[in-house]
Image 1 (cartoon, rainbow, N blue to C red):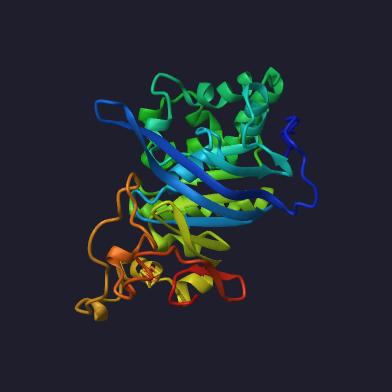
Image 2 (image 1 turned 45 degrees about the horizontal axis):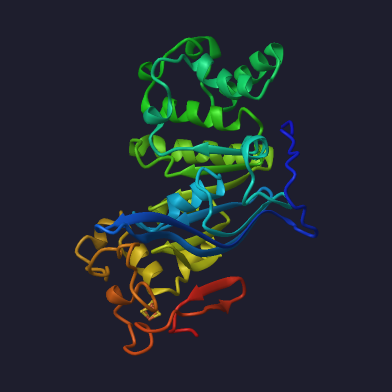
Length: 338
Ligand code: SF4
């Protein structure tokens, strides 16, 4: 795959093996309240740090309202970070503006949750795929080549059968393939896929995840897969990060998290995953009561404490737990292990 290149003038960092490094990233949305315009904040992302190597995929998993979509959009720089640092390919992209920001975004493809909403209904497949190429001043001959090859990559073939269709003439799975074709057409290094299969029929979900996995391996892409469904991560990623109320509470390799979850919230998420084995249909599983907290007023101490059956009064409700390495490369933020 051709390299889209990156010529941003941000600070160049040395010795970074990771394609993406996120350090203590915060995104607080302003929320005006009351007659006197007192400003409060929705702390959607509140101190997130991680590294992602080239060619690796990470799943960011959490319930609705955990901040995972905001994290993806902040990394993509659709939102300006409140604080923290985002390093991409050794360059600080946290505060890039205009032209340099556009160049950064060429390197990061985005796959949205709702494929139909993500596609302009009045544009044909050709126009949808050609638009980012025109914006990035790719010559006509090269544009035609890239449109054809990206449609072949996502298996919307024969190309002639799709090229002049409008989005409403495609099935949900085909629309999502088109969104993926648009995400890869500028030859990015990183793909951020935000719940890419949650609006699709069960029968096409695995197809789309398998397609993303194939593209990742073929082009050595790094991928951030954002999902609420832990069961789909086994098809996809090397790493799982569990997010709750704006923070990452557990990080480990995929097999580790699925077979040996440590954090009570991760265990609850696994318990909430439907078990297809009919023998277990009457087995009652522990699922925590209540809803995720409001991010405008998150609980003190551990944010999971109002729902946690292991909560230690005077500790969990007062002090935020530190992140500890419970096993090699397996990090957990919980007082049970600190
Ligand atoms: Fe539960 Fe306390 Fe651990 Fe939070 S820190 S998950 S409340 S045991």
